[in-house]
Image 1: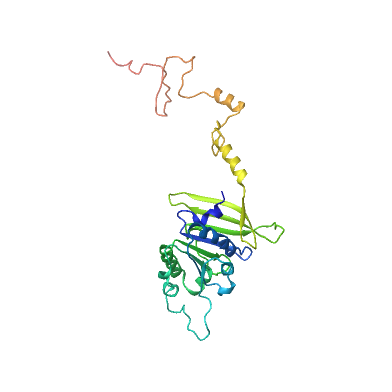
Image 2 (image 1 turned 90 degrees about the vertical axis):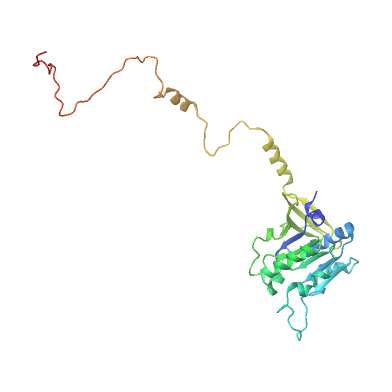
Amino acid sequence: MSLLTTLPTLDGARIIVVDEDSEAKYAESLITAWVPIWKEKDGREINVLRFSGPKSSSRIYANSLRGDEIEVHDYYTFGLNEIDPYSDKKLWEIVRVDSFKQTSTVVLDSLSSLLLYKSLAETCRFLSKLSTRVTLVVCIYQRDFVWHKIPSIKTLGTSYVRLESVASLKLGGNLSYKALTSHCKSGGGILQQAEIVEQNISSYEIQTEMVGHKSAQKTSVVQSKPSDKIQASFRIEMNDREMEQRNATPLPYTLSAASSNESKIHYEPDEIDDLDEEDPDDDLDF
């Protein structure tokens, strides 16, 4: 089963970060493919917060013109005579988070552009408050766009999708890219999967093929077989020559069969000792 297609409806998916770069700008196309999945499941309301460009330049907005009910909020365009709305107001005051329904999905387009207006701390607080207000938050992040990167972007949300370009292109003009998906389950554990995505440029439907799926199965089979060989970081086996040397080495704490029960005292005299064979007490009258 494809993790990428089931990710938007998985239990525990509260914040999904879609990471793209200049060579793999497919985040909007991927989210557009998720829109019918959300609509088919519960018909939820979808709000797009546009910070990276005007409303008309959004691919998700272009798809909404075909009948999908998507509300796009343009926070990029304002008149020259208007005061900068980001100068002194908080993000939750500008976006009006309380106006969203609790069952809705909010797409933040994009997290990298928002960091140009607000600090990282305020952006993270806004994202945390927004995730408690709505069912799902999807953030688009351009890893090669901002000068100051978000540290540990993979752990910012409950799910993370990294989009990469592929060398081979399919004929027909369809989109082709690679998706590395990871999801933290609510009960513990992490789901990870690498897939090659083929997406139709007209219907935005996606077809996925798992990368390295067969080799992973072979690895699990090999690991499941019991092995008699002890795994160690050094060599513990001995060859025939080493065995002969070990058997021929006498051990100091064992007694050989030829040893006797007699004991001897070995004494080395000092320079001041006067040793002779005569009796030293022969002059005494006993």
